Amino acid sequence: MIKFDISILPGDGIGPEVVAASLDVLRAAETRLRGVRFECTELSVGAGEYLKNGDPLPGSAIARMKQADAILLGAMGLPSVRWPNGVEMTPQIDIREKLDLYNGVRPIKLYHESHSPLKGYGGVNGKPIDFVIIRENCEGLFSERLTPRPAGRDFETDTLKITRRGAERVCREAFKLARTRRKHCTLVDKANVLPSMAFFRKVFDEVAAEFPDVQTDRVYIDAMALFLVQRPHTFDVMVTENMFGDILSDLAAGLVGGMGMAPSADLGDEYGLFQPSHGTAPTIAGKGIANPVATILSLAMLLDWLDHPETKRAARLIEQAVARVCGDPANRTADLGGSLGTRAITEKIIAALE
Ligand SMILES: NC(=O)c1ccc[n+]([C@@H]2O[C@H](COP(=O)([O-])OP(=O)(O)OC[C@H]3O[C@@H](n4cnc5c(N)ncnc54)[C@H](O)[C@@H]3O)[C@@H](O)[C@H]2O)c1
Image 1: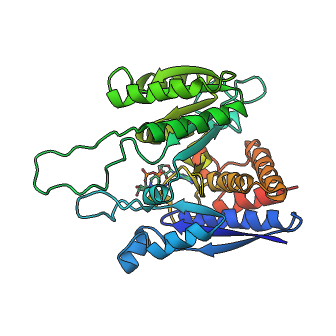
Image 2: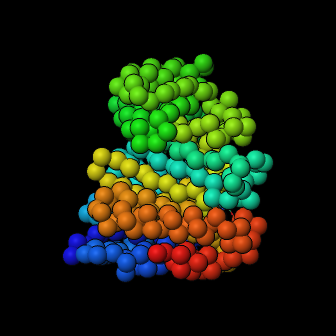
Image 3: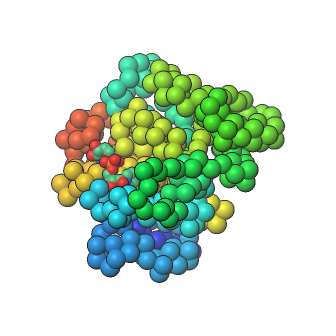
């Protein structure tokens, strides 16, 4: 019997609700596996932990995460809980940096045409939406967010930092992923204006030469905001800087039904953390209406990443169950215009596991 040690970080707002739903799916999938068990250890991290104990990300939690085989996170932060300089606590970003989870993988897939605000997508005759945003997670415009600043100045600045190592490794991961898909990789940058982005493009071009079988193109971030609305079906894998990836992820989620449909993985060379792309959605927290699909799909990514034949089988079971349930327009949560609550859609997904 192989045991996988999973750190569970429910976090704040709707985080605990969508994580609880995903753990029910994990337990149901586990009964169908041979020789594999999951041991889950819950860790308290987030704005709630700060309000209780004065630190949103205790060192003991980071130490425990490093021992685990993988990490599942709900969402963290609350708009009302801020540091004295006015910014929110964002332990989910601190974790990426502490564990060097540079490769932010954000799949965007349309399960039913009724989920998209765009016409002509999905369904039998429609165009599919199925692409992945690779977001550089550890530098870019977030790079100096924690650098202490002198008080009382009449200005503030943030630095968009791109290093050769940071750009090279994330571009390489994007190309590797493209190779397993439709073999197309798009760089999203602002190389016409920002020297940091011109440098990112130079590194992208160098890495592209290692992958002659993958087609490439280069699109400015402002144009990409347009193209994602006009022709999202033309993209396969795209790679971009931290902040651009953050913003495009929400736009892209909007194309397939909203944040409740957008899973993600934050991967490094040693550790893997899996979480929905969404935040804590405070206005719907505690109402039992949060859409758990993004977290359930993130769990499937976790199981795939564990890279054991049985966990990979569980990942496929969960993905197929989600596709079956979400492919039926009768099964819609409130964010998709339906009436199913968190519990009800989770039960349907569990029932659809084969
Ligand atoms: N990774 C993270 O933990 C993360 C990411 C983004 C924002 N945040 C934090 O979350 C808080 C709220 O931020 P926000 O409102 O900008 O973003 P959000 O993603 O929480 O919400 C954006 C919109 O999507 C909806 N939504 C999000 N997830 C949903 C789900 N599963 N089901 C149904 N509807 C859902 C919300 O109701 C809201 O209308 C802030 O404190 C922010 O800092 C955390």
